[in-house]
Length: 69
Image (cartoon, rainbow, N blue to C red):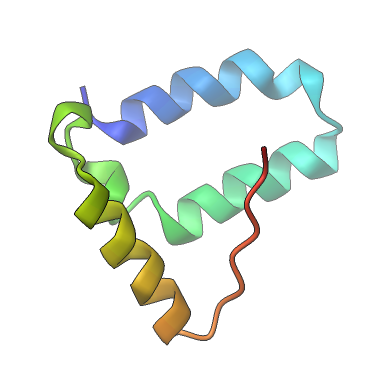
């Protein structure tokens, strides 16, 4: 399974928990910044270094990263 498949399942499961604007914002962020990069990787193949390289690419583009816990 690739990350994009899991994200579809995840977004379906949390859609009712968030306001419409928050949900659309989260999906939009995923689609813009993750879908075509980490989203294409198999879950078992994603390593720490892959995530760090992704973060570095965002920083290089001067994007601010907001982590939600």
